Image (cartoon, helix red, strand yellow):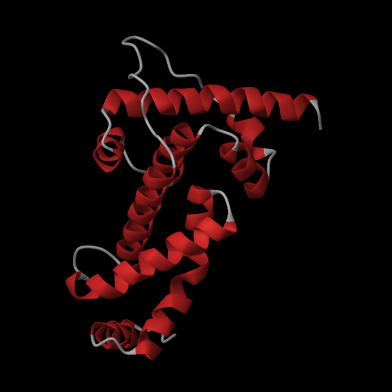
Length: 184
């Protein structure tokens, strides 16, 4: 894939004209990063591939709406892929039926030093052990940087429910980290 900004614009224009070679270039350029994101949300390669392909169909369909001044192409594609993953998960599972975090409840902290002992793959395995909705909120908040209001909007839940899921994720991850540390 061309790497210069002018070259990327050429590929974008090609995608807008449904040029298959331009679409292939764009897909290949972002494949690894977006597939990693898809696996993180879906938990397996087969579902990740489905989300990835559905997401890129949306990218190609809506590439004409991309505005370089508002976000980088990577950020724009990433947002589409995340939304596609969320839509996929909603169809697959019943989500987010828990009430919000009670007022005044303190969120548990996870020892960063303990987390630093684990590889990225080991941490991903821990996150995959969380209940679906809790893992989804944790991914959106802690990994992808969404705030609770944005998560609430994306998932159709309240900010309090998003906070509750994050709190639950932290509690459960703390237990899992402690178990792994005591059983190396």
